[in-house]
Length: 297
Image 1 (cartoon, rainbow, N blue to C red):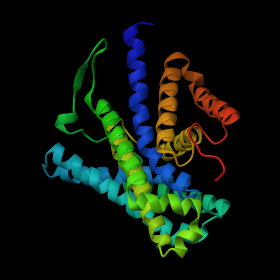
Image 2: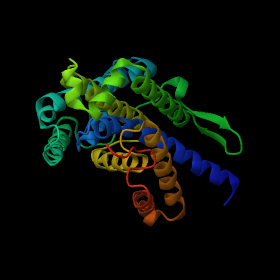
Image 3: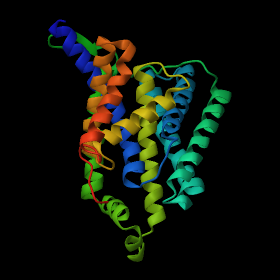
């Protein structure tokens, strides 16, 4: 086991963790802060990927540059997922606040419907975006030689998302209202705040992050139907390990799960999935609220 091999596997784990963080941070906003059980979060990832690719492919086929097509596809994927999230919140979940089992069952049904509709409209063939020229190709990295530029971009994007969410939740009026609504929803409403509107805005942001992850993930590797379950389960594990509603905890959870998954596939691929759940079990046994989760809510 050479140093080059160890650094490559670890870097693969960090780039995978970056993608997990982008998707799971949206899930943390919806599930951890809003206390809304959205089992269709993986479907929002797929909506972002499929709609973004449809726009990208249409523009690219009409002789648009790959750069222009990718950026427009990215915006389209994020917007489509955010709109789908708003519809879910307004039509189905907004009036089920506090009814976790009901929310879980409804969103499971929605995820099945969304998967069937995507299959009917787009077909079941895998697809992949072409990365923009600035992010395409390899980048020199010490020790290991060359490494995918787009994968390194994923790490930078995840850092930007993490810093942006921290600033939003801790330094803005919206973030204060979101956190206040978690602790005392009735008091916030009594202060004249439109709590349902805050919930819709938060859900749209969380869904948009899932759509962002869908486009980024579909650029890094081919995507096909079925990835919604993978990213839903991963988001659940990441949020449980890191702590519900904690952006820092979500980042730590994503790093632990992403690096563990890559090292597990490198050392014992047949049983690598066990390592991921072993981490979750160990954290729950020692700290049930997660690594950075709060108690007494």
